[in-house]
Length: 240
Image 1 (cartoon, rainbow, N blue to C red):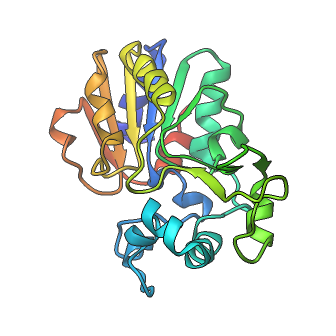
Image 2: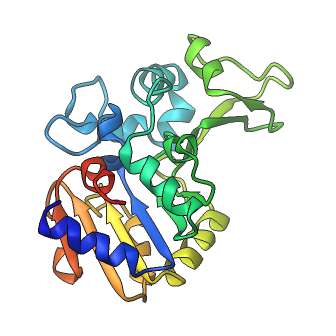
């Protein structure tokens, strides 16, 4: 274990209320591509920019093309939790982790065993009819081949993910803010901290130590007590 990992281990050992704030870089080691890196989703070529496809307007106006992209790129149903997800679940079980705040929609934190997860941008594992609320599993979206109406009322089925032009869920945000303000150690990982309003939530942290783990530099590196540049799973997986 190198010096920075040892420093992080000491902070974890001396903390009782750890909150984790994670982005796409937490799941890349599970084989899920991120968005903004050179080989990320937003730098691939499509008929429309991914930011446009993943908007509420596009979903309403071009549902066939939305779901074609969504099924191809946003439904990693075979992905498994990596060492980062597993370590956080382990800390929660031990009573040290008080909340995971995630920008990811893949559900891997829950798959690893975490219970206190605040999904800021929703989840691919929840799909609802916008008219009657009937639930549909992600396998339905994957296998249907095209947008189909709700089998109960004929309404439009939508993944429970926050698209561009949509707001975050107030209850989820409130839970995340409470977890962050109550923490004595906050670990921010796998995020460029450029997606707002989600990234702004770290400003609510008033605890003792702020740690950042990310492949690249971020706008808040200078404000952190400890900065580690590397893979999130490798780093967290090396801790006890």
